[in-house]
Length: 451
View 1: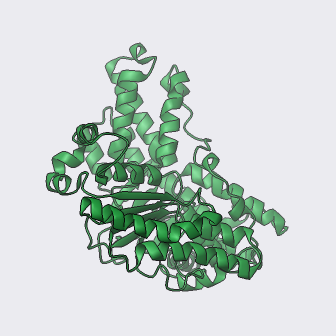
View 2 (view 1 turned 135 degrees about the horizontal axis):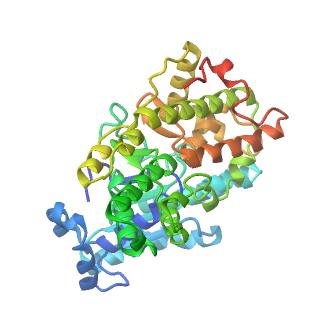
């Protein structure tokens, strides 16, 4: 349990990227007492790479701590007063019993704050709700001598949204934390969320070789090409995220849904790679859809730039990027996957206009640097129109936009492109403007559409 990253850390990442699964697994690994007996858990975890690669960490931390977990997605405000004193007292009792400080794990820690911003119109009532949760977290995570480590996870970075000093000891790590020049400490969640290219390749091999009902119909060479095509399809449709210096992070839920859907596919040529809404269908976008903005033309500029940049990049990658390199191979082995995992996504080499370059830099600044202005603007959510930059940052934290490099953000993949265009369309229609992001975009952004 590395304290160098902070005694209390928060991992901010989009939904359906495996945060809850990671936290549950972490609790089972660290906890002295869990539902599964210690010996059974030890047997399970010794099968993981963690045991072989980080044996010292395993021995030092497995089943060594009292672990308390809280899920704020299901929290109810009337229960909070009892929790203020209960959780710290429970830590004290656990310390008396086991002689160890506790680990507190909080899932969906941002939900109460975001719900208050969206659903509670009265400013005083909103503040009371936010401060109730802040006081609870403060009692548990600040000046608590029985706390060893606090681990929080959520979608939105809510530092500064009316929290006073309640959470000022939390080290927040977002997707871009750890990209060169953006954070001085390695990302503690860099291997926690999402599937890597290695994970996806392993799932594809296991399914095609052992579970696909029609695997006997293909010869060895056709099977190899089928696996290759599946990997390329996953790269194009479900890749595009990163965590710090880890490239090619895939949405786990989308990958699993896609692979499980192959059960009804008899021929490789019948696989449908695009048009899926796996990620979109996993959660409500009503908070984002209800957003009002006084800067709709600015929002249109940002979203149009993102859409066209993604289309240009995707077109280039199919001709000269990783996808093109893979399609030139008849067989993919683990060495190829290692190369993919170490490569940044190739970017379009086409020159951009000064205006497009300025927009790209502004987007990166909004998403990865400009924090204070966003917090102040978010306090008016539901009662006043938001600035375009605040909406972009919300889209970034929601997963519609992802970090590419330290000075560039972009749409992660085709599935998210479709989702962003649909979401933008709903916002644009309320402002009586065109809901198509690509209307006259080449003229406005200074791009040429020829590939």
